[in-house]
Picture 1 (tube, rainbow, N blue to C red):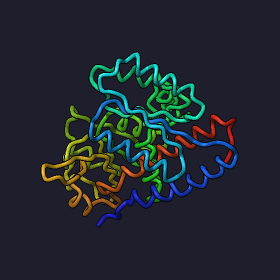
Picture 2: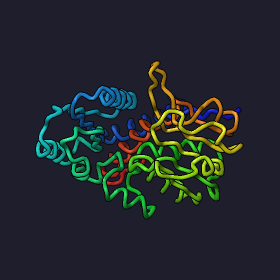
Picture 3: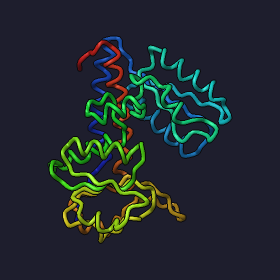
Picture 4: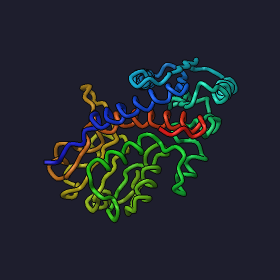
Length: 286
């Protein structure tokens, strides 16, 4: 049976260390601050924003929540972001996605100052990631890399398959794995012979958002499986993109859903916020 990669425990270790860093920064008159902008009343987004606020409170980061009407004009939202860009108490800005359909997500994300883009979605930050000179790396992919690191397995030379090509997870994690000298294949909805490709992978990153679409018997014996998917079934149960029970019989390491990637995503959000505070404070070292 596979070793379970415990995202909750690892996230707590990161948060404990970050709490010490925040205490140090406050001793030097620096209070790290994260502004979260929530547009509308999407229930899932409200849950995520609440969780982020609670995590900030746990380690002593100031949390500024801006809840805006779902019909807000794009110009007004851009003005709000501009105000946050110029607020010295705010070191990181996060616009909760998805946005209402009438708002241009690309324009909104590009309006965030790259120095405060702790989600790592700004084109400049994505470009820096491509050339392996990152300023901020997207939180979920960064969390995945920390989970892989925790297994003690050397990524160099391994065959990695990423299932999903989103700008938030699929593409960035493929780049990060490539920078660690993995041989990376990106699969998506048009990929042919998905089972065959996954069957050759030493590392499988599942980030496609379809419950149990990756069958357990596809997994190569001894592979590492990172399941990013969070899917709620009709009975209310949360499951990943991988058939967990069967995959666990073949994998050497596997993340659970929930309790795997999710906690690390929030931990990396806090990590990026603290790093932003240090950078904006003349490079203060902790």
